[in-house]
Length: 278
Image 1 (cartoon, helix red, strand yellow):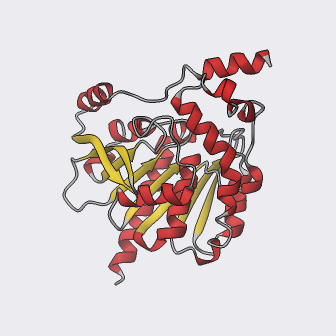
Image 2 (cartoon, rainbow, N blue to C red):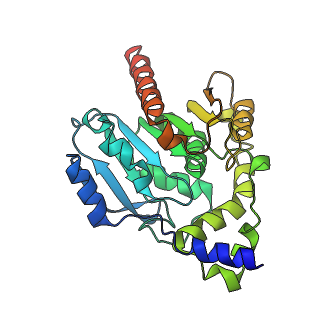
């Protein structure tokens, strides 16, 4: 119990969010034109970052962060990639994280998908990492006809392959929950709910309209590779591809950024070719 106590105390220090001032400074130094502010989406007030350097009507790319996390998880894709010159990039603090009702999570993935849908126009590409990949996949299942596709990076997708750690249940108990930062409270609540939330995907897989590209490392200890194998077994044939990264861990969103950007651009090129057929 002493180990649990010390761990929970350390988790109370991790806020996983960057202030507006620091975000603005980083973006300004990188000469990225942007807007940052609160918006209403899916009945929630969420903090949203949008790049504004691309031409009006350029394709949108929505980044959905994991747990714990915030919109600044995608900051390297804004500041280091040059994507903002060709695409309209969008990132947001999911409910319960960053500055979107911090510490008050929305564990319902259907509700989370509504929030994400309301932030973009039809034809957007959705990029989700970890638990953000679960939200992105739910978007494809619910609104697949409205999006260009989804890039699911180390996504939590299998109800039977969600790892609970020894501290997850104690962290939800009232004597200990107060020690956690808002980010960890939200992450823990989502973790405890995800198995049941992912089971709700079951009747939706067969009617999936969106197309997905899954990327997963074989040495992912947080969201095991089996999550993507499960999803591939459920998604209708021809609607998904899986890129297996041998020996890579859970943090490929950052460690394999160049590869992720290549996949983003490949998906966009295929979408353009598909539109030109009509």
